[in-house]
Length: 176
Ligand code: AMP
Image 1 (cartoon, rainbow, N blue to C red):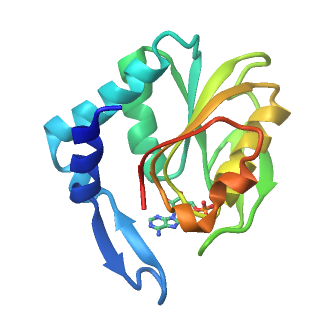
Image 2: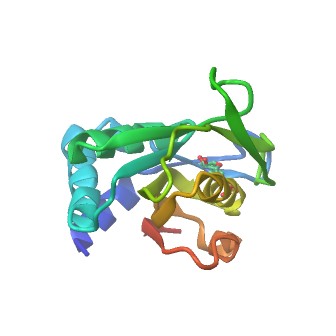
């Protein structure tokens, strides 16, 4: 683990109290993305982690997961699959319902987005209660994909989202 990378990412994250609703400490990653060399080192860090792992596809969760997931898929030269909020994907979809800290209640994936037996890394910006990522894992499993690891930039440790991902490998760069 590159200690300095973790520290730099941690200090680049902007905390917004009471957004989008009272009581939520919103972790704003736009201040991370704005720093080109730092963003590049983050993606390089994940590439190094997964380069030798036989990962065949990145699955990214809407919407900030897309930013990290797209950069990682590009850097690894592998395909990207999108997990989106209901009604956004145009082709035939599978849907999984979930509970989260705030907001939406289900995610969808195209039925051909992950191939049977494919080894995937699921990516999102932040692990809170884990409901969103757990629902996305269910979708990948329904498509018979194999989840190598679930990767986040940020984990809110006290919400114990890892419990909902029991049985999965879970990796986060920064934990609050
Ligand atoms: P959860 O399903 O509770 O793990 O929520 C994770 C999803 O909600 C991720 O896609 C995050 O982008 C978003 N999210 C939840 N809580 C926060 C927070 N405190 N700051 C930023 N994003 C959050």
